[in-house]
Image (cartoon, rainbow, N blue to C red):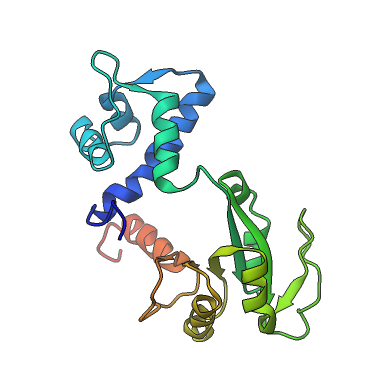
Amino acid sequence: MSKFDGIPGPAVRRLSLYLRQLEALIGQGRRTISSRELGEALSLTDAQVRKDLAYFGQFGHPGIGYRVDELTVQVRRILGTDRDWNVALVGAGNLGRALLCYRGFAKKGFNVVAVFDRDEHIVGTTVDTPDKLVVRSMNDLRETVHDLNIRLGILAVPAEAAQGVANELVEAGVQGILNFAPVTLKNMSCPLAAVDLTVHLEQLSFQLAGGNGD
């Protein structure tokens, strides 16, 4: 059981927003920031900022607010981005290859070290990325996860294949999954995060339509 169990999900998700803002402040040379300033940058109240951070510890200093470098270190530690994570990506189609080209993963310590696919025409080919990863067969999943100490998996497979592949990842030893497939995974024994691009677009179209379908 984690010491952070029971903390509201929205507060955890806002930690990533705080970290992004803090890293921007470091780039600007800022040394301190108040809860009001941090909240205003993210359209939050200062009370919300203080409440969110208080779930994880006491980070403020009287008369100073938060020391930017110090709080950045603490938030990275809480989020687990103060270390490197080896990641496996399953699905070497258009979406999977696009994700492999995204350099933001590595900048945050998420290193995609292996890519898998079931398509025999794709297995053995080299992905045109700086790392030049060779697409592996799903038959090699368990051995590769063990040999490369892979802890996280990314699913970029069709909806109908997602549940089965997710089960295989867990059985192979993967401990967390980011799912890009447009389907809800069920009965999983590991932490999950889902990114359904269509849902996000639908939310945007709703706002543009004024919420009334016009």
